[in-house]
Length: 388
Length: 76
Image (cartoon, rainbow over all chains, first blue to last red; front, side, top):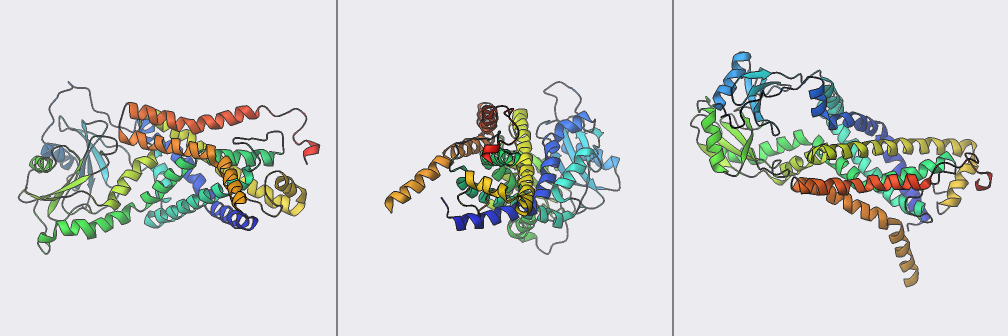
C-alpha cells in the first residue's frame, strides 16, 4: 500500500484532474447518452431516409447514374464523396457542396438500385446533429475538439489516480461494501469507489478512444503528407485532372485490386482524401473489425487505371478502430443498452465525486469531526483524504 | 523485511482481486464484439453485463437504510 505521503500526492492529483474535467465530462456523458441511439432517434423523428421494399436480388444501377441524380438535383454543386450505407446496402449517400474542399456538405440519399433521389436528411439542425456538434467540439471547430481531447486526457488521469487511491480506502472493507447506515457522505464515498472501480475498463477505453477521435483531423493531415503524397508522387506538378473515367469502371478497377473487399466510400479528385488527379476508392472488409480497416485504391481520374493501393498506416488504423470502441455501435442493440447503462454509471461517479469534494470543503471549515470520521474508518491517517 | 513486503503484496491483492477480475472480463467483452457477429456479440454482452451485475449485487446486499436514523450516534 502506498505511504501516507504518496497518498496525499495522489489525492491532490485525483482532486484536481477530476475537478477541471468534471463539468465537460458531464456534458459529454449527457450528450453522448442519446447519441448512442442516434440511428433510432433519427428514425423515430422521421429524419431518416429508408429504401423502398423491392425484390431482394434487384440489380444495382450504374454508379454514374446514381451520381448524376445528385448533380441533377443540385446543378451548382459538386459531389465530394459517395458513401455506401453499411447497414442498408441499397442506400448511397452523396456528399455535395459548392466546392471540393468545403466542409458541412449536404447528404443526398440515392437508391442504389433505381438511381433515384430518396431524400436529404437534415444533418445540420436536427436534434442528433446539434447534440453531436456539442459532443464533438462544442461548436468551436478544431480548437474545441482538441480542448475536449485535453479534458479526456485529464479524465484518464483521474481514473488512474482514483484506482491508486482505491487501495487505502478499501484496506479494511470487503469488495462492494456500501455503508448505507452511516452518514450520506460515507455512503456516497463507498458508491463512488464501487461504481468507479467496476467500470474502469469501459471508462478508460471510451475515454481514451474519445481522445483519439479528437485527433482525427490531424491524423488525416499526417496521412496526406506521408502516405498519400508518396502514392501520388509521379503526378506532382501536373494540372488537375479532368475526370473522364466512368465511375462504375473506377469502382470495378479498385475491387480487382482487392477482390475480398467491398467499397466503403469514394473520394472525388480534389477532396482532402485524395489528390487532384485521382479517385480514391476506400475498400473495407466484412467483419465488425475489418469493416473499419480501410484500404485506399487510387485510380487515375482521366484514364481509369490503378495508380496504387496500400494498407493504411498504423496511426489511421488506430483512429478507425477507436471509433466503434467509442460509439458502442458494433454489437447490436444489447451493446448499445450496456453502453447507456455504463454512461449513466459514469454520470453518477462524476456527480458523487463532485458532491464528496463539496462536502469535504464544508467539513474542513465548520465540521472537523467529519474528517476524523472518515479517516478513522478507512483512510490510513487523518490528514490524508484520498478519493475526492 | 521480506515479511513486511509479503504483507503489503497480500493486502494489495486482497483489495484489487475483484476489480482486476471485472476489468479483465469487461475488456474481453469490449474486444469480443469487434472480432465477429453472432456468438461473439452474445459473449460480449454477457461479459460486459458482469460489472453491472456487480453493482446491482453490492447495492442489494447493502439492503435498505436502517430505521434508527441517518447517522448513528455511536458511529460519529
